[in-house]
Image (cartoon, rainbow, N blue to C red; front, side, top):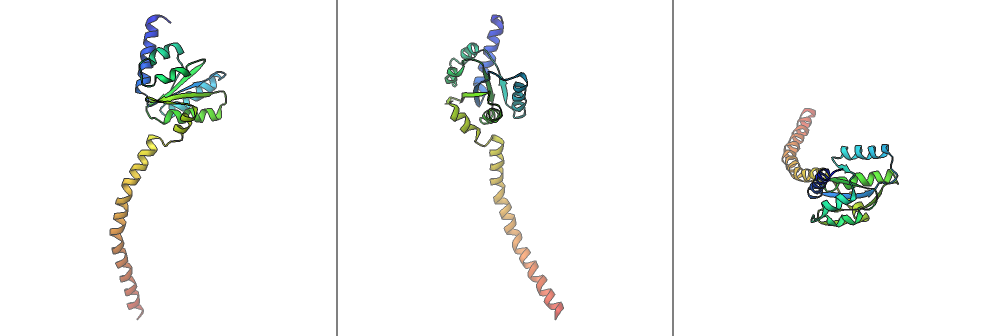
Length: 172
């Protein structure tokens, strides 16, 4: 790789570190090509990215960034998992690590907040952006539904009273 290519990789990594909601660093030593392909497929399905980069170039790209604290994890064969959604990358990598013991999650960063192994696990258990949006929409829609039910209830009660009076009148 020549100097221009290295500079391009450093710029790309810098953009990743700046724009991602979360970046998780893992050691992937011992993973087969098929297992790595499976990880990439899972990540793609969850709108998450997986990137293998030279540690030296990643450390250069981290200089001056909020998540510079993860540079200490960049030793050995490391892979970066990242996403704009602050929870998606952590969920994907945690699920993959449960199925594949060769992958070792080292830590990560959520913006300027450094995450250790337990921190990544805690983030993975949080609801995703889509789940939160669905929950908020449900909370917003529930009062309107309750109001519609309350408005419709008296009419329903009157109809049932009239129906029972009609039945009594017919029986008499």
